Every structure is written in C-alpha cells, then in structure tokens.
Image (cartoon, rainbow, N blue to C red; front, side):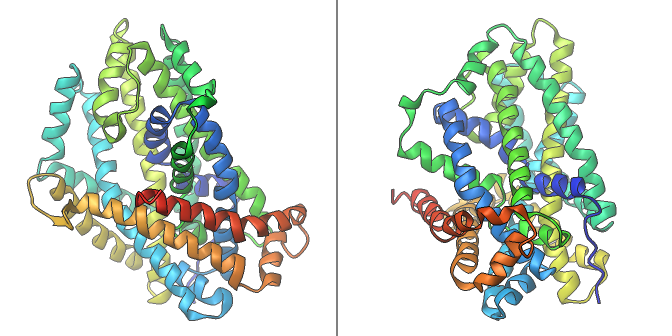
Amino acid sequence: MVDRGNFGSKLGMVLATAGSAVGLGNVWRFPYMTGQNGGAAFIVVYLVCILLLGVPGMVAEFIVGRHSQANAARAYAGFTGNRAWGLVGILGILTSAIILGFYAVVAGWCMQYLGASLVGHLKGDSAFVLDYFQRFSTDPVRPAVLGVAFILITHFIIVRGVRNGIERVSKLLMPLLFILLLIIVVASCSLPGAAKGVEFLLKPDFSKLNSRVFLEALGQAFFSLSLGTACLCTYASYFSRHTNLLQSACQIASVDFLIAVLSGLMIFPAAFSVGVLPDSGPSLIFITLPSVFQQAFAFMPVLGYVISIMFYALLVFAALTSTISMHEIGTAFFCEELKLRRSRAAWILTIACSVLAVMCSLSVGDADIQVLGRSLMDFCDYLTAQVMLPVGALLTSILIGWCAPRKLVRDEFTNYETSAAKAFYPLYLFCIRYVVPVCILLILLHQFHVI
C-alpha cells in the first residue's frame, strides 16, 4: 500500500491549496484583464463570479478528492462506482501535465528576467526591452534550459512528499510572495500620479459593464482558481476528514482574490504615473513593465532596480506554487496506479514534461513546430484553456449535481451533519446543479465566439 501522506496543519493546507491557484494568472493576467475591461467594474463582477462559479466548483472537486483519498483518476472512478467517470480524472491529469510543460517555459522566462534585473540588463527604453525579449525568447537553447530547470526545481520539492515538500515550501513561498507584493504596492502607490491608478482600480464605473465584461470575468475566475485541472481534487485527497470544505474553499478563494487585487495595486499606480495603461495582454510583464518601472522610479534608480528584482522574484515564486500542484497531480497518479516509489513516479512526469517544455520553447523560436496552424506552445495553451479545463469542470459539476448519490454529497459537504456548512447545502446544491454548468457553458461559447 502506498503511503500517501497528508497535510500536517490547517494553515499548511490552505496555503498549499491557495498556492496552486495563485500564479501568473493573478499577477499577470488579472491586471491586464482588468485594464481591458473597465477597471473596478470588472473587479466587482469578478468577485460575483468567484462566488457563483469558483467556490461551488472548488467544493465539488474537494468532495470527490476528500471522499476517495486517492489520485484523481481513482477518485472519480470510485466516487460513484462507475469506472467511466475515471476518465474525468485522467483528463485532469493530462491537462495539468500539458500545462506544466508550457507553463514551465514562461516560468523560465521569469527566471531569466530575475537574473537580468539582478545584473542590470533591463535598463533601456521600451524598444530596447522589446528587442531583448525577442532575442531571448527565440534563442534555441537558453529558454529551453531554463524551462527544464524550473521543472527540476519543482521535481525536487515534490519528491520530498506532502508535508516535507509541498506543505513546507508553501509555508515559505506564500508569505514571501505576500510580503514582496505588499512592499511593491506601497512603493507603487507612493509615486506621483499614482492616485489615478488606484481610482481606476477601486472606483467602479458601471456604465462600462456589458455582456463581454461578464464573460471575461467568468473566464478569469474559472482559470484563476484552477478549476478542471484535478489539482483541487488531488490536494483534497490529503485533507483531514474534519476539514470544513466550504470554509476552506472560501478561505482559498479569498486569498486568491486578495493577491489578484494587490497585483493590480502593484501595477496600475506605477503604470498610470508614467501615462501607460497596463492592458497590453501577454506582453505586459516582459515588455511593458520593465520600462514602466524604470520611468516610474527614475527619480531614484536604486529603488527602481530593487523593485524590478522584487517583482520578478514575485513572479518566480507565484509560478513555482502553481507548478508544484501541477506536478503533484501526475506524481500521485503514477505512484498509486503503478505502485512506484514517489521519486520514481515523479521522474516519469518530470521527463515527459521536460520534453514538452523543450518542444514548446523551440516552437516560439525558429523551429517550425506547429499544430493546426499554431506554434506548439500556443496550441497547448489553446487546447487546455479553451477545451480541456472547461470540459473537466463541467463534467465534475454534472457528477456532483446530478449523478452522485445525494446522501454521499450531503455527507461530505456537511462532514456528516457536524459542520455549520449544512445550512448552506440547499444553496450549494442549486449552484452546482444549475449555476455552475450554465456559467461554464457560457465560457465555452464565448471562447469559441458563439456569443
């Protein structure tokens, strides 16, 4: 029998699971999505979407994982006794492995920029920074090496187990991430003209709301909380039987939302102080922000230098908390299904994802590695974000809302009627049966430009 391990404390469990959700999506995607969709009004809608979609969806995966105390494939198969549902777990495992492959490439870019900031290579105007990024990202060797290095760092954390690896590192990284974020927020909000950025982020203009903003907020809530990756299910398999699932989901969603808003307070005031609106999409952290930090802190170059280092250290920490969770999903599967030692199981995923990371990195450069007219990296991003994640989350909501024995779902949700959460069970059941599937269908239709 494989020794699965479990989280040693409630704090460790919350920080580790929140770390799986907190990543580049909070520090990078959320600010530019906010910039593109009306600022504070988008944040209000985003918060509503977390309550409607995020928390019920998280609890659904928690119920499957905590009840089964097994890897995602076995958890879904065993939840109703129907092996066909195990395919949902396998879909989540495959999804997380693909994401880890290309996500590690972007994490490697963050490592490169952290090193470049330390040695002062990012000094120059926006044209210089653009040229720097293009030369680096298309290099056939360095980005690939850094991507594999990031996976190896993740690997050596994973092999130490749940308590000594995942939980211990999460207890270190999450507070560090939060402290770095607060320091940069204070520095950014102290800049001349920063008040306009704060106002844009915190003073809603509801005249800017439309159906597109709502759908974009739904999508951001969905991806930010890692729904559909089997991560929440896997981590929940390490939960104590006494864990209040609804309370834990609310705590994790609150941490995720707080980090996202603080990321906006870190970026918007600095950007507004130099007359730049951070709505530039994927280029934000590698092209726009380096020159923004230089201009904003031109009155004190040393401070600008320190802020730049702290910012990219923050990105590296955020990426690592996410890659740890993605690696753990596949490691748990191979460990339990193949009856392997944890270290050997981890190596299977590490080698597979490293190969994918190298291929994705090369596809961004001169190598012509394309799938359906997209670079391999773009295709992996498209396939997971627009197809695999929503389908996995949709099937999970159908399983919990319509197919699983009602008593089983209620028992897990209420900790066998011992939890105060039992008062919310009727509302939860309504959300998971009707609200969550409709929200996910809307996201799918929006992504494929049907609506």
